[in-house]
Length: 482
Image (cartoon, rainbow, N blue to C red; front, side, top):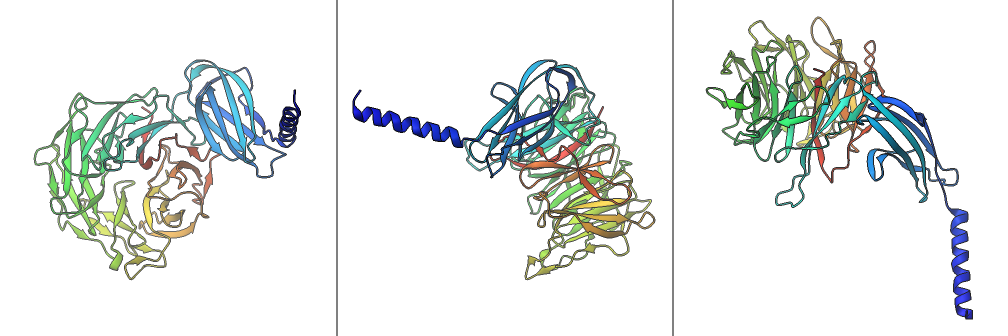
């Protein structure tokens, strides 16, 4: 061996020894489930990771349910989540990465022998549609609401289900038997059956159903026999399509559909009795229709109603909710306010005294000056508190609701969190937990205090969305357990 080779090998050995001396290896500790445990699915995993030799800390923790099969990933050094697994034995791996290049793992073998009954389901629409794009993503992801899991979610084993182009809105019927997706770019409504045992969805015969206009919202009558779609091109000819549900789940236009509205129908809701439809328009109107048994829409007296406020920024209602059939509220993102209306015996909305309730800042020179900017609303299960998702401030505003008048009183905003974007926020079927999209691309879960209205993050929050290219999670809907 010549001298040059000896020197080269010596240098290589030195480099390897140095690398070994300074390498970091995260320590992964799994507290649930125990190794060789027998569990019910969704399986609950709780783990932490640390890397004493890496001052930069832990980058991420991931559960592998099988070699190369990523089931759950979170940023940071703490994981508390659920994964769906079929019955069987799994050699799972919980692996962590630190920010110094180190990798550590823990092996956990478990046997799944039962499937827990779901507490409901949550469905997220995803899209990264780009005109002419070769790898566009348009789909729905389903999650099980874990019974007894503090509002936790576990992605179903079905994976992503295709929609048409740019799914912008989604709704379920009252019983949780059907799912309806409004596709904005392709201008149609996609209808699916929901399988109550596992949350899987399958297209009904004939889906998708062409609306021939961009769909910005969908809603379902309490009976489940009528579906409504907001047709919105921001131009003359906008309106609402009414679709009758056939015995096989397919959709056919009701007589007279579509029905004309003002320009820009953005959000719609059917009252709990199924007698009235309310539509919030981007052009600053609230519209009310009586719904016949066949789905024919007749405007109520005085409809459309001009929404107050707005100024240069406009009212721009982005969401509308009707908790009990006696009042409705709109999220007026342009006006930084929430409007409230009493619903009379004939269905006619009358603005509640003090409405709209605005945040400071307002509109100056056509530019929104406030961080309130409510994009979506929801109400807790007791009907005592209203929550507004603030797209600009990445916070949630908490209001108390006067039970006699329906007037709102601002309590506080949550500290700046990861929530934001365009919403929506919704509660689980019990009204005890609140779900909100996180700005980072996950789902935040909060437990609602029904005495104070406070929100406390669930132990499993945030719920990571699955890797989906650069897809944008546009909306979600919560379905009750069947």
